[in-house]
Length: 527
Image 1 (cartoon, rainbow, N blue to C red):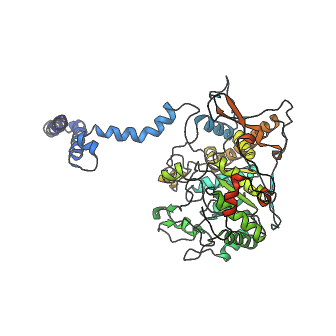
Image 2 (cartoon, one colour):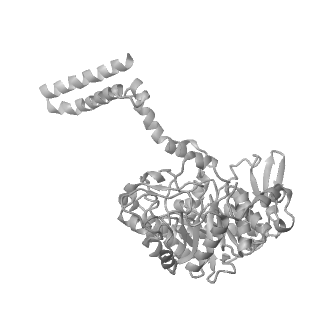
Image 3 (cartoon, rainbow, N blue to C red):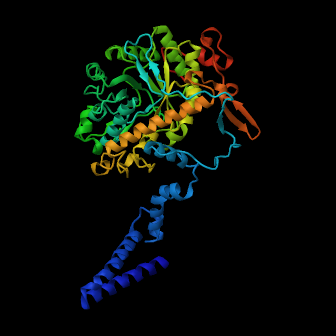
């Protein structure tokens, strides 16, 4: 009854206003039109069948949808505390923004964190700290089969494709990498002019769609791959097996986003939806994977070759390790992505439930390689929620040699965590192909921010290590990271987790690994 009275009242006001406007003065249209529009909206709400809320509460029901649309902004700016936001809290975002701008990233009056909360982690300072190194160390990437090794920085730009990011965003990231002397992963969307033009070092990522090196029917094209891998800026090549946001499924780029430029970069038809398969055509067994990686290295004229995955089955990874041993060949690096997700949009069920978090994934890969005696020839990169110096140090302690960051690098060029990356409506022009929005990314300014952020974060990591009595990342050990397991007990990572010794799986596998190691088959992937 109330909604009918409301519609009747609005209708009466609209009719009365319209009559007054006609009989007295056309200026009355200014008052009549709003009521007429509201009356029409209310009638539409009553007769439509799609939204129950609007059908029962015409006009008023629109407030619900308006508040729902504003919820992320209201949550971020008015409700969340500095330390409990997700995916990145306000404190972390502020550190990135301040370091990118070259301002102080310091906090007065002590921590806001509850250090007695179960799960809290602590790095252990030394009573004999060291001097902070004046030069940031690098990690040599390249095993015995590699003839053109590369020195990787401790923090690099993680995989983000042109197409998901705007041209200006890619230019800013690569220019920042060139200025700062660190690497930029292209993502699986192909090798674009925006990656190549600034001259920054590149890790060219090849996904299941083989974009930029694919045949017309979607197979891997060796000729195109060799031609593009020969670019001077391409320092390493990475085969993407899976990513943290959505391990085991491929991506979809809607046809509306596939303009002429993106179509040319990816080697796909313009205007048609592009689907990345969930699996690779170039291998179906661990042994075939190892052989294909060796072939990629040959085609890349000896440049370092590796693969990226989000760890799931330890048995499957051990099968790859067995294939490496039997084939006498191994990748030069492995990038471990965490199930915490990244810049790519993914189904919520995958983002929340599929894959190991970065810490567990890193330790599984590190221990497996140690256990089969291959750790000294394969470098491990960590990709996932690395934003601060302490994040970097923790990843090194968990088994990584270097780290990659995607979302923090996006913060450095202006991302505000609006979480609109998949809508083509990024409010700051970072994750969009809308040229009007993308023009907000000023390349000269944002590239300097990327450089400053990377250098300040690496410097922070070196300061933390020095305070721990370590002057080289190789001196970090698991006992230097503590975790609170209950309100009264703290244990080190050396106590909480099992750490294999070199070659242990080959001689006497511990009981916790024995079943997986025994059943791992180099000729098939089995859970």
